[in-house]
Image (cartoon, rainbow, N blue to C red; front, side, top):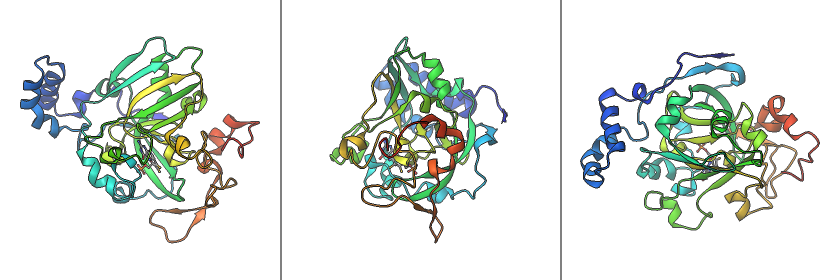
Length: 315
Ligand code: MTE
């Protein structure tokens, strides 16, 4: 059951009032560069709605009671290829990313395309904590207390047309700040996608924080997807565009290795990755491995989405 502790989250409540007003002035200013230059230090102090605690309600409906992975591990062992291909570079390199101001373009099969500013998104959707298991395709897992709101809420607001069968997500492309994008390790921008019913499932979140604070940049600030029954790479970070499509989107990983990374990528211990088994995983911090569960333990909530589908074929 959802117990709302706060109704509407105003960004004016999240950010110190004085800073908030100054920032509004900056964002609505038409003076341009001069104003930006004088206000930049101030902007930096609120970067990513930064360092601020978030107000959120509790939604224990889907929460796991398993031990949470520490903040330290969650924010220092990351996959974020825009900031390097090893697990430790994102925590260092992602600090170069400017996350405020931030906006998200909504387009494709919708009644009307639009650009949403993050602070307005935050005003419109009450935040909840969701403690989810996350399983990476590389066989490690974590338990993360996300702060976010159901993607379904934003989709309803976007008013997709009857042609919209899929949702495609796109990460920011800004090689000046994203060192990894200066190398062709993946086709940039990072793209992911979901089928509409997957996107509308109440488990699917848009996250803006974890452990009660705004997302660390290396975890996908300021806005990322969280799909806990799918391998981690589906949970795309630092989203700037959401496009409703008639046809199945092709994700960056599918482009690179279609035999290894399928569109669905549901956590499935019965379907091996071509180069390794997916039967077991190591929870970060544990010594022994544990068995991987179908749909990462969320079968009750999502297995019915795939009734009648051959999940070996649609991996
Ligand atoms: N999103 C973008 N834009 N770029 C990435 O490289 N990596 C994915 C996913 N989202 C990735 C991304 C992978 S492989 C995983 S396992 C998760 O982010 C890791 O999220 P975390 O670092 O917050 O644990």
